[in-house]
Image (spheres, each protein chain N blue to C red):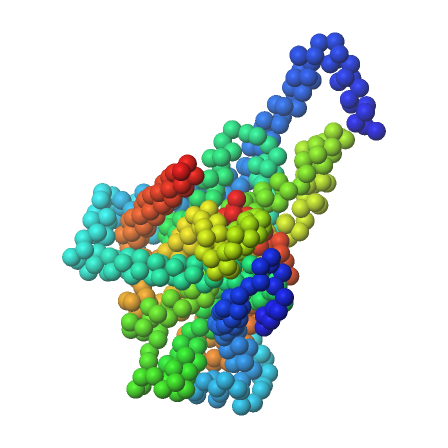
Length: 332
Length: 289
């Protein structure tokens, strides 16, 4: 009803002088409409500003200050130290810098292994589950359980499984399969790296699976049919159609997996408690520990800023490389 | 187990493919379910069973751990804290995200791209980067104004609500885009303001998506460990920290730890699985587009 009432005058003025009429009628609405989006965004912007951008800027400022425990209550009073905190962080001959470098390298190795395995498991499962079969929906729901479980509940369970004396892993490996002379330690020493990797992959692969599975749904069925007519078998189709078609999804997926794994704090923190073994001392946990052990927030901030710079450079380079590769790939 | 004799694909899948699939998916299922089995079975064991060598089959079943978990640590308090913090953070985050996503989905404005990219990129920054400054900020705000952010539920709510915000906005944009524009344009013509169109047309049409985003936001807050371990005190401790109370004591009651883990997992896992269809499209949309 109302629509016709509004349209009538509009139509009449439109008959008289078509070009100018419509904008004149809409002007007040448009002005309001121009302010409206910003008004709607305001709460989100304010919150992001307060909890993300402002702390980030403060963090950068802090990294140039000698911010020890005496200045926690009034951090602005802390004396400036220039690049002092950075010099300490990257002095790889001194204990602090050496430990940071070690933790950084461990994190790099861990990230490469974890992302690779997550992708491999996720891609295999997605390819195998592309065709429908009985129980597929159920399996898919089941595979999401590690992703849905609260991190600490899942990781505590793994910590129990990796206990030396009463854990499942040693029971299977040592008691049932007879590997090793004595039960191994999994939560201390060099084995901790493997432990962390297993837990991280268990937790991380379902996301890769989800994204890759969604990506596979975009591949048109006709391509497979045409390939089948040309005599390409199942394995050949997977190699030449399915895997290449994952390329665009992979760009974002690998980046997200990389950032999440590299920044992972929860897994090692819950798995090892406050004292992570050197072999599994991921960088976030390392900065956390060194900050709250010494209460030297200045050095901790400098380390955080260095970490951020590294992530920005890697992300930038990655996006540049993969996007350019894709473009030239399209052109050829 | 997958047993498929009539593949629906145009070509018959070869035996090698079917067998590889069977073996691979069986192993993977085992890997995924192993901790779940350990969690469930150990939570029903008497303490003697979990203190000695691991046993695949419990020697006897008992529900005692489910009674004891509430007494060993103040689990009920942690539960209430987690519920209040995660619930409030989710509700606030949803309201803020609905407005922002509506603006991005339905309006053209200057800085739209900058906004979406900036908001999303905060997602990639390491949490540790915000931890120290936010810690200082909350402590100093408390000293200057008397508003207790550090150690209070309020501070944690404020923090968590921004954690889920970027992804919530991102997912909601996708759901809102899927609601036909004609619907809310018609509503606006009918005399609803833009906000009326949002609440009477767009929101009702996108309810499943909004609920899915709510579950995501709740999961994020429910499972967060880093800030919970620094920003809470004894009275505001959440489950994420509280659960470690069982594990760091000299005598670890593993059966109780497992029972408590199961109890805190059930709400979120159930919610996730119930809404998985909507959640999955939302979570993957960003990467697939």
